[in-house]
Image 1 (tube, rainbow, N blue to C red):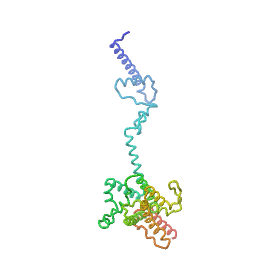
Image 2 (image 1 turned 60 degrees about the vertical axis):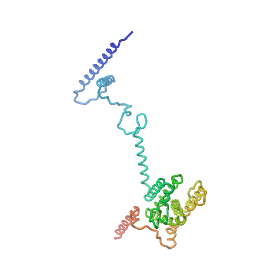
Image 3 (image 1 turned 180 degrees about the vertical axis):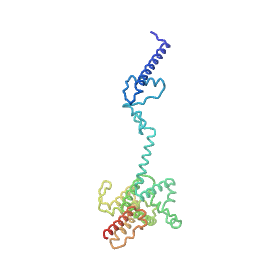
Image 4 (image 1 turned 45 degrees about the vertical axis):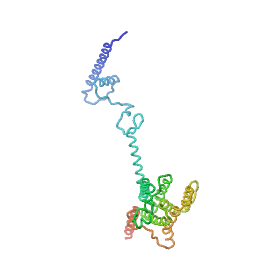
Length: 331
């Protein structure tokens, strides 16, 4: 049995017209029944009327009906999710994750104690300058040179010599971590003002010692001096070093021994020896000499304490308020 094309087209058009008329009649009955009701009533439409109304909207080219039901969440665009309906990441999702990672890093960086944060930043800047300038230019511009410091007034050299840890490497990362760990511990224990005085004294002592022993950089000596002061403050505390449990006071010597073994040269112990010597000078005059009857002259000025140490200001306010309260009670 053969079907001609005009007959098929005519049949399709007739069925579409019948569907349109049925849908129109259904909508007319619905509007005539519910349009003049004085109160709002909610009725449940039959599946046939829903299908016919969708068919009419498709034929007329109107707006599509909003999808509902259990699958409505797949088409909901109000949620700000980083994933699509299929579970893949959106185009802008990676940028948002990068922004959150950067903000977390900045938050952690700002949470570091102020003086330790400045020191670590200077270490990063000096290391970047060393990479840009190269070995020869960095030695000529950043290294400690007593002649240029005294006669050429190149006063930045002691500070750059105290911040240069060499080119980026595993050793550089370990030294930067030690600088952060020991510097944060000292600043938390002493306060920012006392820690600033400690660093300035260490840079002064180590500049003299390094100039005498022809050491161009002494950042490793600063780290060892920090560790020595911490270890002398609680010498008998047990700490982990490699796989051993040792007293805290032996830790600077253990790090010195490990550097000598890695370098295969006894000259690698010199920065540690200078750091222990300069750190012990500070510890002796700060902790031992006053107990022997001497005067503690390693005290930061009051204006520096008020400027840098918020805790000291709070303590002074609390002491003043407590004194006023006790005076009132005495009256």
